[in-house]
Length: 171
Image (cartoon, rainbow, N blue to C red; front, side, top):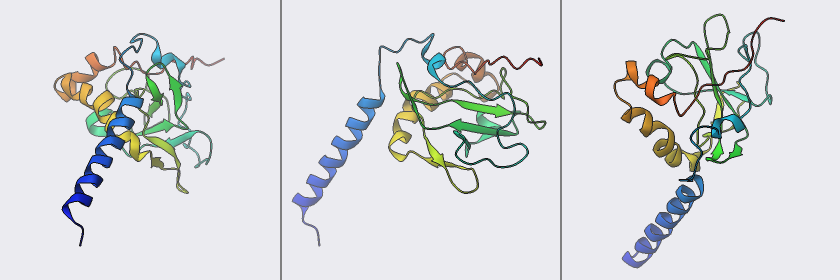
């Protein structure tokens, strides 16, 4: 059985680790206008629309599309993370039922200041960067929730978390 002193040391160590991770992921000097421009642009078509392509830098998102990207059929996250002025960031790209990128509105994917994707499994689904979950919540999810009702929050949120705008015109 563990004694009280060992338990307290373990709790203190865990608190130190979590604080360190959070602080290394947080940068209050983030340039709110350009940090997302350091990320890879979204592919114009769903990376796995015809078949799953592994190790292509895009993993299928596990997120709640109906809540956070209403209107999207499927979303992907970039990996590995990109070191930006905001920290270890990642791109999120969402697509309609025809596999076309949604680059505006409630269904558009938004970049993450704290990337939660570390790669993909055999089915192309994202693997989680567990140590990034807390920073992601405070730096990406919480601001979205504070922006208001789900049906309107994206209008405020997307001003700082600007969806990728690649040139998808037919050439």
